Image 1 (cartoon, rainbow, N blue to C red):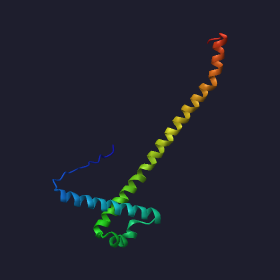
Image 2: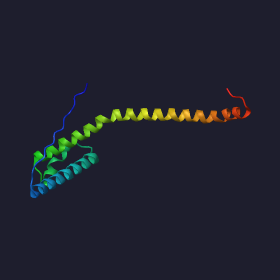
Image 3: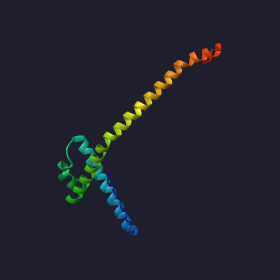
Image 4: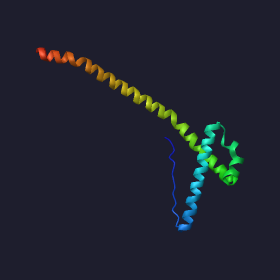
Length: 124
């Protein structure tokens, strides 16, 4: 049996000013993450290869870059880990669809004979 992961959420009682700051930080974090992902896809390099440039370009601390890179690599690994089961599910769905299509084709091919037998009075 697989282990279950728990997710925890916390609500904070923040003023509008604090909410605006947090929203701006989240937007900036997401932008850096998206840019890093695009660069990783484009260059096929690990996130660490871009670290120094990102610290200067986006004005972030090394610990923030490390958090973004680690989070992004975790997301990528998660998607890659889910690919084999999704491929298997898709292959099974294709096989079921082909089987259903074959059954429909067989029924269509048998339909004129059954219709002719019914019309001539030869019922089984």
